[in-house]
Image 1 (cartoon, rainbow, N blue to C red):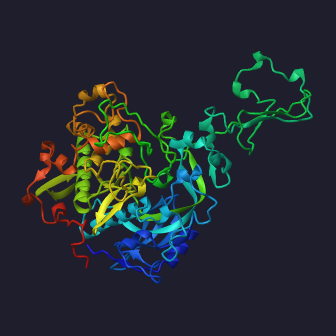
Image 2 (cartoon, rainbow, N blue to C red):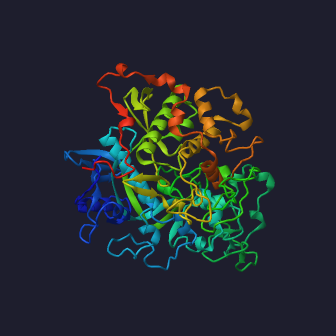
Image 3 (cartoon, helix red, strand yellow):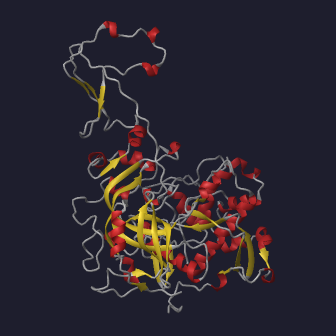
Length: 602
């Protein structure tokens, strides 16, 4: 695999990105992570890009918030093709912290993009080579290299990435509403630093006494006559009644403890006004940038120190209690019963890494939730095997732990291939596709190695949203036991995201008869054979982020290569003689290990 950089003249591309209503400005090539691998100078620092096989050459028009029709160019042949391109906007700062005032907004350099020449003129998180956005983008590039150089078709095609300022950057605060609502900073800066859609006001309703809408009884010269009063017997439909006497105004004031009633010349003169009820519709988005965090996770994270024992394990009571809290993170929302809603805040301007990727069809989650076409066991077989092959490849080649693998971080594209062929563990496999090719995405919490360099997402920084999940360099606390990445974590985490879709209640777990679903359920068990999510009475064993920590420490039964050795998958084994020559065999055994610097890069 050739690893180097290329110099593309991106002046035209940047101009097309800025003019096509994507809300991007101040685009630049330079990414601090490049310092790790390349000898940058004052001359070349902002003129290099990675040598991905296909790169974005131009943008023609915007299709949606995250999709535009682009002109792609082959780096070797120079051939141009027009294809839809997915743009992922990975935040360089934590949007949630920005919304609640954890950053110093008076600092004029807060939103600055990084510079090789003046590295101190931006926030320390933005210049950190382990910024989750940089770690995510670079691994997407590496999977693309496997796609083109080793024909590993589960790699995501990567067309390039750039740093920029994103105007009207969308953040879905749905899971964090209650937390955000307690901060004066958020209320004082609405319509100043960011705007909030109407769904926010609908959801908070009566759940807070602060920042209520004031009730304003306004003045009008019209006298209220007794004859104007309806008889109750005349009312046939509540919708026919006019909202009389009061007018509700949103007042831009400070902290309001109770709604105030303002009387304006209350001499029996009242204004009758009909107030039309507004219909609030939720907006669906496919952008992971609309997550409050760097990854779209169905389990809310906190940086709580949960009081684990010195050996890195929890006491046997499994009560899930937490001893401490971290003011920089939030560990839950009381709005979980409204799952599926979007509440979008749009930040006026925010620094992002714009990552250009191939467009996929949809997520694994969409297939699981499709009640009209429930997945058959044969389809589950295909899905599980494709995921296993992907994880085995990434672990062998880069030592990857994804650390947030759930059903929305696995996507699929449609394929005409009936079967996929693999060689792994010195064994050949023939796997049916049922028309779908699955790909793992979103590596914002990933840990991996490349050319002797450890890439460790700053999500694990002491102030990060996954702090204390692991404890090893570069984010090592010498007062705590060492906890290193766990190759069983990803399948367990994925199993936890599927479990509630296939088991209604833990007491009914034994009623599941499907062999492949039993395997998925088994991923959710700790080393003692206990369900990692639920106690026998159905209560959560480890709430919120503590689940992540306990999976890391207590689950070692689902390393992907060991799962593949389950006798259930014997039926997919095939001899090489039965594979015709024209068939592509993804030979995982022969893909080099790129964790160290011993391979040939030329």
